[in-house]
Structures are given as structure tokens and as C-alpha cells.
Image 1 (cartoon, helix red, strand yellow):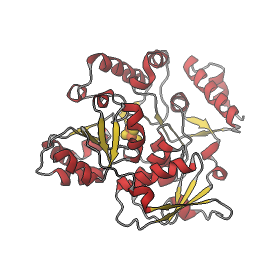
Image 2 (tube, rainbow, N blue to C red):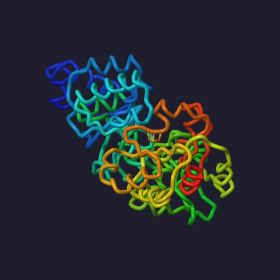
Image 3 (tube, helix red, strand yellow):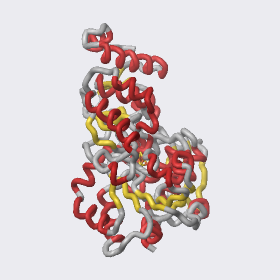
Image 4 (cartoon, helix red, strand yellow):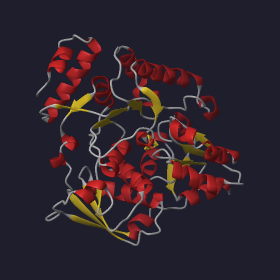
Length: 387
Ligand code: F3S
């Protein structure tokens, strides 16, 4: 694997032990995956941030590192809101450990924006090379923006943030971004909601596994694409997909689709996932809400009061820029929390059933929170939370 003179100095330990070890990790990864070189990255998004997932061992490892990020880097959602954890009902012992994890990342120069939607906070453009971790963010970057990132593990993304480069293999290379299976949606999707596209992702992720799907017959907007990709990354391992006439590479690159397997999807495959089920709480914002999603929730909640807990999750930067909408939502008794989500926060484990408008949450809530999950449109979610 080619390394430049600066890399060689880092490997020789001239810039400290942490940077040496981090570059060793990137070189080892590169060798495993056959990378010929490292590629400079525009940004990193680092998973392994929730104390619920990394535990004491992860905290100890982070605390032992000593270097600073050299590219903009954010964190994945953590187990609680950094500012309003008491209000969310997080217990003090957990909060103390979570704060220690956050402090360890801050010391490493990672910005304390804890979100799976870093693309709302930092400009990310077509063709950018990135080292992002969280599966829905990876899917959005690759598919909706046309940037290039593999799905990094937490240590790989952290190493890339501290070195500013990542091994150039997998989805960093154009030849690995071609469609591998066609999904032909045979349904009238013009009235489909974000939740319907999440359900489409839930269904198709199971069918395609880790292949790169090429969708035809749909025309989703960016929030719907976000939901589609997040769910496919959850029930499958899809890190990149294309939508005919919609996603940037499907528009700019003329892919040869001949000989690919075609899988039909019908309306019934999706509609059957929308089951009626009594729920104890409602949670929306998986992935974290866009400004447009906050606006639609605010409109639906305006003048109403919630009758059961309603959690809304969004990036702190998105909340800060949309204080009016957040104010309207919270007037209803709902709470808009940053930095965390219904899957990584231990608080959600108190409920035995949760309603969501996300295909990804539909897939993860049962295992991660031990609760039954019901999917509905955002309108259904607000109706259930206020009835
Ligand atoms: Fe984001 Fe949590 Fe969903 S990290 S994609 S809100 S499971």
C-alpha cells in the first residue's frame, strides 16, 4: 500500500503514539481490503459514542488516546441528550459514564454534535470522500448526496478523523458502486409518506442483503430517501442504492442493468407492515428529523396536548435553527431531544410498545429496547399520541 512521506513519519512514531497506532489501524484495514493507497477525507462521523453500546472497556480505550482530529468530525447519537438528560429521565449513574465518554471524544477534537444526520450540519458534496460510521448516514451520503464512504466501524472512523485519511477501497472506488439488483416497485407511490418509504426499505433490505439495489417506479423526496436507506441498512446491509431519475449517480452515470436480477415489490408488501397495535409511547426522528419533518410535526401538534409520551429526535444544530417549531411541538407536552434516539437511549426500555414512523426503528426497537414496534405515518403517530 502506497504511503507518502508524512504517513511514513507518523508510522515511525514522530507524531506520537496515538497517531502512530491510528495509522497502523488504517494501514491494517487497507491491507485486509486490498486498498492501494489512503484517500484524504472531508469529514468523519464516529460511532461507538453511547455508553450503552461501548461500556467500560470502550471508555477506557478512548481515555487512553492522545491526539486531535484533523478534519471536521462529529459523533453518532449517544445514550442521552447532553443538556436535558435529567428531563428525559436518564439515571445519574448512566449519565456520569456517558459524560465521561463524551469528554473523552471532546479531548480528541471530535465535535460534540451527536447525530446520525451530519449532512444537515456540515456541507457534504457529490464526490467527497468521507469516513462515516452510522449506517443510515452512510447510506444517505453515498446514495442521496453521491459522496463516497464505506460503513466504518467506530475505531476506523476515529482513526480516519485523527489522521485525515481512510483506506481507498470498497465504495470509494467507482467500479464498486454499480447496481447489483433491480427493485421494480409496482405500486402507485405518489401518496406514499416517509413511513411508507421506510417500510419499503424494511421490506427490500431483507431481500437484497448487502447488494446495491437500483429502484425503478418511485420518485421519493430527500426525507423519503433518508427513510428508505436507513431501513435498508437495518434489515439488510445496504450502504448504497440508486433510484432511477432521482439519486445523483443514477442521473449522471449510465449504468448497464442488463443481466441483473429483478425483484418486484407490490403495494401489499408494504401496506401489510402497517399494523394496528396499542402502544405506550410514540417516537419519531429515526434518522434524526430534518427541518421539514419538524415543521410537519409542529403543524400537526399545534393547539393539541399529548396523552402519552411523544419523543422527537433531531440534531442539536437543527433544533437551534428551528426554535419556533420546537416551541410549538413542546407546547403540546411532546419533547424534542438532541444527541440521542429511541434506539440508543436506555430510557426507551421502560416501554413495552412504541409507535414509530421509521422502517429502521421498526427493525431495531424490538431488539434494542425490548419493546413491540408499530409503524405508522407521522399523521398516525400524532393522532395516537394525542387521542
Ligand atoms: Fe439515527 Fe438512532 Fe435511527 S442513530 S438512524 S435515530 S436508530
